[in-house]
Length: 493
Length: 85
Image 1 (cartoon, rainbow over the protein chains, first blue to last red):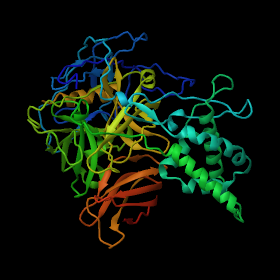
Image 2: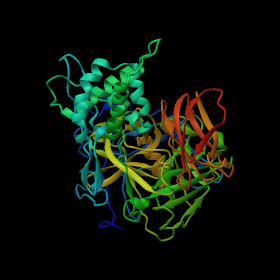
Image 3: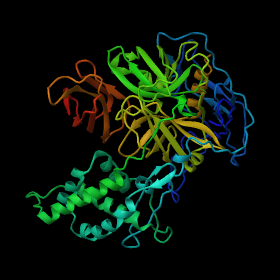
Image 4: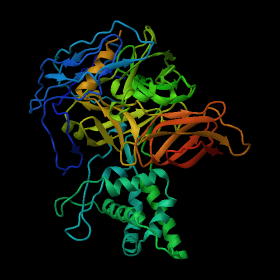
């Protein structure tokens, strides 16, 4: 907690592109559309007293070299919000860019114009995430087989875990076994074999197979030095996935004892390699920044209760997923949300606070669009008293910047007892105009968790986690429109 | 088409509803919200905003009980039962 209670400022590069499909692979083509901000704002925040259609930022170039401006707000611990400005005016359509709040809303809020601020360039890694920062995020590719054959491989899916900052992993021991299996499988694998192997895998491992087989970058022969183990796995996954999709013969395929045994062994090997859960538990939840992450117990008017995650962005403001405060089929706005900062099993180091005041945006509440699935919980005045819990900064860096940084995601997953803080670090796979897609391991209950990166040693939330998908979990990206809403909400005092 | 999955978590040994279990989707062929549903005193839960498709659901009881169920979400979804042990 070296930096506890200090003010840490941040640096962010905003981008002026509203639509930037980018791949994470090192050799991927980066397609960047330099358009002026024109967010079709499902992000209009649904607010208490006023709706606004324009978000104006003063110019503030920070030397990204491309004239990108910046949208950022500083990470602080127990200090008043300090914000930095962005560039240009971001015009938003009133239809979607209006804030929505529940009937318990408080009045008198006003959005304010961001002011540019000078950013520090000091770099000082903070200690708490160090053990999580060593994950190899780069994508490696290679080619096996004919020179014209492309192989897609994602290195990230099979990284080893980390224990006390040291990499641990058993995959190296398994690769020789796979190497021996691959020729046999490539020549003989059929739908029955593939389905047999896949049926023995855990859901997590099946997801891993799909990811490796489908989401890796294209590589060109000779341009990338292959890493044997991963390439073997890639080939294995590719054939497994392809064969699994094929229909069975009408007569079915009889599997002999030898093949059945092979299937069992292959499944076990794949399970060890791919099914590994890379999440790490945080038990020192009163350390920075973990105390800023909150376990949520959500009750909707239907009476149904849910578990989610949120994070402080202001003294009274906890950002989260839109569906953690508004669920369409459960009565709409939550009846109440219990917020437990730094929860650690049954321990509530700072106590808890119940809120009945929420914010979201029309894009979620009215249109149910996943990319606009974010909101916030407004805590009662004086909640948590003088406890200096701090808050996360947030930013809207360029897509390219996002892809160069490892993202960190911690939340309170539903597959663990309530409430344990689990998460991991890994590079983001894909950045779209409004969404971040990654292979960070997440499960239900982590909706609303912050996805953050470090820039010049400072933490910045760049997305709000909200969806799972076998092809990649995802977050609502902090675009300038989202940024502006968060800033407005975080200013509630 | 966005639908929901609802059902009940039941103790496989004694057939009683399991209260306060967490129910989550852990895999599927669509994007699903990563919110965890908690069962009520009748063991009932509801997972919302789930697209059509096939999903793996898991339930985790407070005493370490676990159960899983594969669900195909269709327009005519009926309540499912997840047995935990």
